[in-house]
Image 1: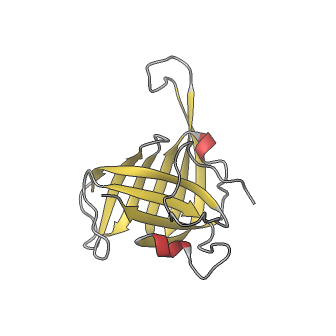
Image 2: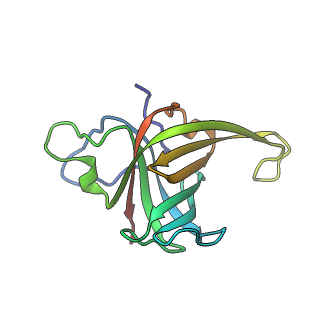
Length: 165
């Protein structure tokens, strides 16, 4: 199994009573919704959001079933990607700690090289794009490859979201 890849200083606030160990948590960060339906509304019950993570600077496009989980511009949420919902040593599930969960398959990983760095430097920047389908709802996660080292093609993933106040 791949090692956990997450941003330094970002930890899931699952419980204050005891430490919870997860089977495989590949990524977690806090995101802020920057845009909603950037290309216009295409489906009645689905909204495509564009969000950026606060610690890792990752960019995400995500289709959300807003009929059951409304989400709006400037909203902040914790997002995690895991290969399992099982927690060690108990009856609880990782799902108990989140509000919106989807299960899907990672179907594409691609690299993109840009000529300039984001701070205006001249060195090339490599970004990775991770594509996951959740039964037709799509996610694209883009950013520094060091935050995506644990992902593999054909991998089954759980996407977990909890809004922050």
